[in-house]
Length: 346
Image (cartoon, rainbow, N blue to C red; front, side):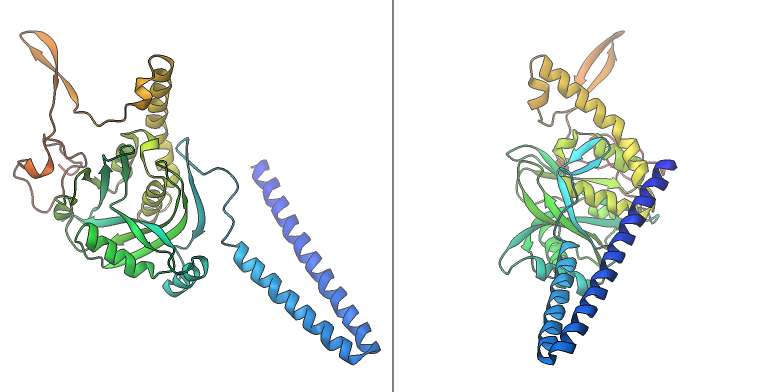
């Protein structure tokens, strides 16, 4: 409490300093113009023009500085992990026209950026779900948002989100919300990203049957509930997640459930800490644990003739998977394994 009060006091003191310096500067300029006016009216006109130009330049610098520099630090810290994502603008409450104008002012024509899109659908009970994309191609396996693709930086992000969703998933969006944009340096690449969430009227059970075109990609359905989202985040090492995608997922949860950001951070911190600890253990031993990022089939324990044996459970591909009869109004389980796993609605 004392620390918060001190920080608030410092901030207010800084604001008063800025206001007082501004008032002194205005008073000094007015006095100088008065003296120049008494001496020569032509000189006073020139001086007044110079003051107006200086004010316009200062306003331009103030408007541009509110967006250009990223916050101090090397990235965004969440759940005890540092994600190399530097937020430039948070525009969740801005008007669409203003967002389009700010993007046009920031990026030159022909400059491409990456759009990170989370697609949200609801099941028959009204519960929202989203699609998480697993990529197994080089340079390393990664996990990212429902759809990721290049778009022009100076664009209408609402129109580009519609196009990206149709191209990647074939789903039309009925509502698009731009969360913000920044610089993403995760997964051995540095690029500017626009983070967007889009809602579709297609049921979550149909969303869960989506298959990406081309090899090396797969999707799984995740219930947009704190428990399920934290299981999905903590199921793999934090370094395999695209930083901008994690930022967008957390912001989407905060929109659906206001105030859940600190809860998500607390719930995912322990799984990520355990994985980081085992990765360090691997570096101290043979070093293979840290490099081995391949997706493997799970190993289960079974009792055979009174003894415990290990057996590998082979997960089938989605197109070859034979689904069990289920309620058509209820979405699939978040893990989408070969066995039926009940959700919290059963």
